[in-house]
Amino acid sequence: MAKPLIVGVGGTTRNGSSSERLLHQALAAAQAAGADTMAFSGERLLFPIYGTNRPGAAELEFIEALRRSDGIVIASPGYHGSLSGMVKNALDYVEELRSDVRPYLEGRAVGLIAAAAGWQAGGSTLQHLRSIVHALRGWPTPLGVVANSSDQGHDCGTQIGLMTGQVMGFARAFGVASGAPERLCA
Image (cartoon, rainbow, N blue to C red; front, side, top):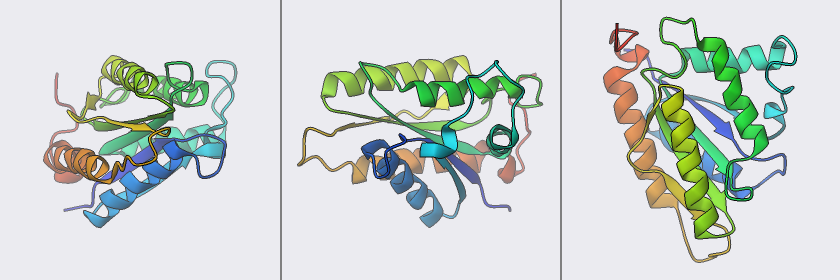
């Protein structure tokens, strides 16, 4: 059986941001559980606004990684109570998968991480991410992670591990690498 491919999306353009660190922590947990991983974070997500140009090489690499993925982890900073424009724009490129056998994010578990300087902004960002993933036919994991960067004593390691375990469990059961049908619905 092939290893599941888990693709990470998110972070900020600031190296070492909370959301980027948590994204890479989740991908490390997925690797430890036997997955291959790819990360699209920081400056690798500085795509042109979706729909203004034909996708270039960087955007096509991102689209192809999502196409091949068995699971996804998305991490966004909370900007004014919602996800960042950079992460939202990257997710808009999922539209390029609309005609695939598995359109959009269908058949993929999606773990979600929101990092913000406050619980309210983090919770709101997580809810917006869930709504977007639902609209893209993905399966948000039951556990989403909210990291409050203003709470220095809060460690998300256990939550990241549980959420990543949910992504991996779904990927093994239903992902392309499992040999399961590529489309869950007719």
